[in-house]
Length: 206
Image 1: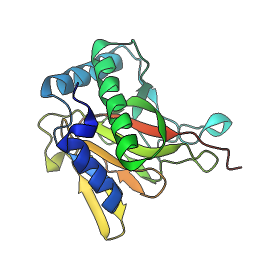
Image 2: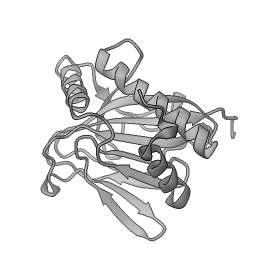
Image 3: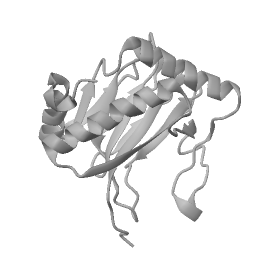
């Protein structure tokens, strides 16, 4: 794999993050790998491995369908060849971002997310009040042929106003976890993604 530090892709991502706090890249992964990951997500859903996502953390976690309606399963190394290749890409990206932006990113966590038709996720921030490790949020979309009428856009609340990103297959969105509110608008068809966070070493805030 080509080191990210030597690629135009990393330069675009790093420049975006430094200048505006978020980045969108339309073809982050090879198309074949994107399709494999979509298939993997659907297979997991078919065998009942995806579970309703909760809000909060620790003992305060609760499933609240009025806040978010996606079904998720966390990735672990060795679960599938496609997932391992995806995690390898993100590890290389982590190293590249540390070399260029000195973010101190130590690891990456990620889960599949499936939004059934009608599901959404209300406006929120990705960093917990009592845990500052999540530094950079990452959403990779797995939906070939997605159209504006399918809904399900990621709405970012930027200083200059709202901006919506369609969850098109292969598109990667990165943004600063602590400072960029966002939401997922209601999807009108099944919406698949890999959602993750690059984390730094943190300290308890409470």
